[in-house]
Image 1 (cartoon, one colour):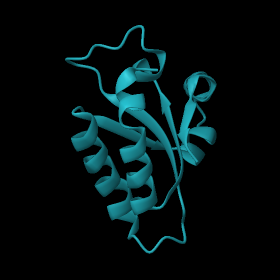
Image 2 (tube, rainbow, N blue to C red):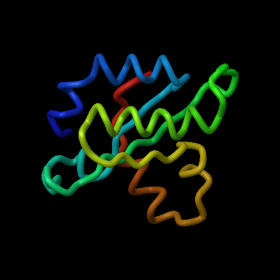
Image 3 (cartoon, helix red, strand yellow):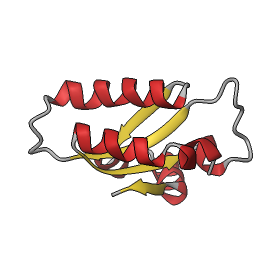
Length: 105
């Protein structure tokens, strides 16, 4: 995992609580670390939201993504875990789920 994640764990946890995230996992190059390009790579996350949260659904998704981008200083892609789990593209689904590392929840 890229050090930027460990460096900001406390702030990431605070954002998760603010936006009703129950579980956050990192995957892709930022999880692997080896092929992560600091100047160009984005950060990919699987996210589970508490559907009972008082934060409106679009604010949960887009607000959380924007705040994570500001914190990490790079583009962030969020995918809801249940959408990945139900994807018909089993190659992509299996790869993402196999390399996902929980960082919150």
